[in-house]
Image (tube, rainbow, N blue to C red):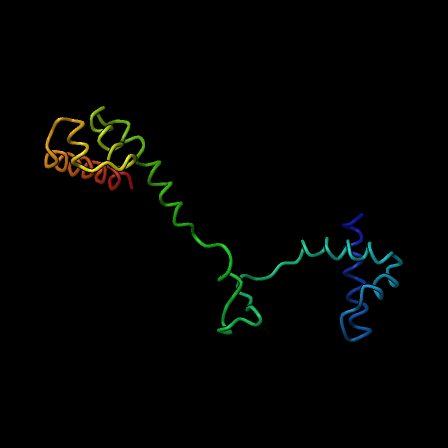
Length: 147
């Protein structure tokens, strides 16, 4: 029903535009289409879903006068790269030994300091620093080789 009314509305709109030289009112469309005004309004709303515009279409009233529709929609989500990195890192972290996984967890999930991690492991902060540096180098290499 709405699909038929949408097609009828498009024809009536075009006919009245050419006859009147302007956009027709809802009442004028209602008379021509022999439909109650509320059904014309419903058909207008339904037809809005079928209106398309080029992404390169200029936006009227934009401050710089050069904005296009594409400037306002669909941008790459920076967090998406983090999700991709996480999925690439997860199997490499799973391959680490238990102690190395705990160190990564404590440092980057629980955000413990190197000194706090050293206390838990019974080693110096300097030793933890070297362990983390080695672990990160290993993971970084794995990420670079995976590309």
